[in-house]
Length: 224
Ligand SMILES: C[S@@+](CC[C@H](N)C(=O)[O-])C[C@H]1O[C@@H](n2cnc3c(N)ncnc32)[C@H](O)[C@@H]1O
Picture 1 (cartoon, rainbow, N blue to C red):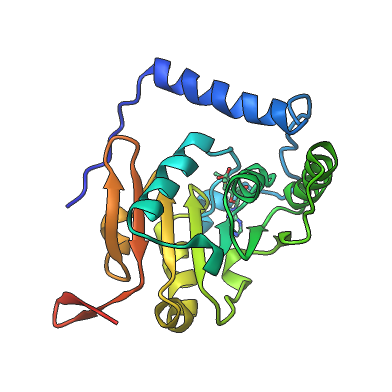
Picture 2: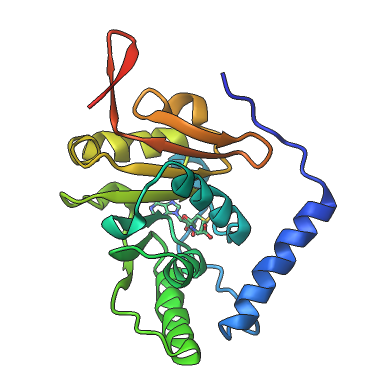
C-alpha cells in the first residue's frame, strides 16, 4: 500500500514555481496570460475531469531520471500527455528529452489553441523545428492509441475511473508495446497497479513510473 505525502513545504513550492517561471522566461512565454478555457466545466467534478494547472517541471525531470535508471531509451517511444493544458509540459519534454514524437491531448479547445500558439512562439524564439510536437483537441476517452511504444504522462487530468476507462480501451496496445506510465501526483497509485507494475516511486513528491511490461497472472506479476 503506497501512502500519499500531503506535506510539501512552502519553500519547496516556491523553488518549483521559480523553476517553472525561469523556463517560461527562457522560451519567451513568461509574459503570456493563461486562458481559463471556455469549456463549461460545471459538471466536470461529476464527470471526473480536473481543471488546468501546469505541473512542476522539475517533477518531469524527477520522473525522467527514473527512466534513465532503468535503462529506457526514450528515443524509441512517443510521449503522450494525457490532458495537456496549454502545452508547456509538452514543450518542456520536447526541448529537454528525445522522443519519436510528443503529443498533448486536451479536451478544452481554448487551451489546445493556446498550446499551438505557445509552440509556435517557442519554435521561433529557440529556433527549434517543432514538426514532431503535436497538440490534439479531444476528450481522452475518444482518443485511441496507435500500435506504438508510448510513454504516457499523467498529471492531475482526470479521476482514476476515467483513466481506467482509457486504459481498458487501449489495453491491448499498452501491453503489446510494453508502454510506460509517468504519474505525477499519483493519487491513483494503489488502483493503477492492477494494470501495470510499479517500477520506481518517489514517495516525497508522489511520483511513480509504471510499466505494462508485466501481466497479472494468478495474483502475481509475470513479465510479458
Ligand atoms: C492539471 S492539467 C495538466 C496540464 C499539463 N499536462 C501539465 O502537466 O502541465 C489537466 C488538464 O487535463 C484536461 N482534461 C481534463 N479532463 C480531460 C479529458 N477527459 N480529456 C482530455 N483532457 C482533459 C484539463 O482541461 C486540464 O487542462
